[in-house]
Image (cartoon, rainbow, N blue to C red; front, side, top):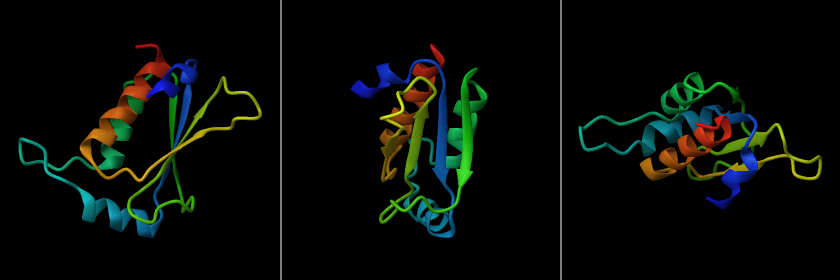
Length: 109
């Protein structure tokens, strides 16, 4: 994603964890090659835990989850005119991988 460069300097990851998104997460989990199904919250928790500058916030409905959970990424270095980047729906393993890359890039790793 080209927006990754603008996320340098820290990141707040706001994940929709309302009742609808929780149900959609369970329904949309696709198995990986080893048969396990990664959960969005588990993947985000681990990526943020490994980060030095990212923060994870579980929020109630953020209003953009018609098919699968949505995330709001807010960079600490963004100007007041650009408050964040909405990502979603997060439906596939590739989406999770892209989000983890954004978190890592914001951390400078």
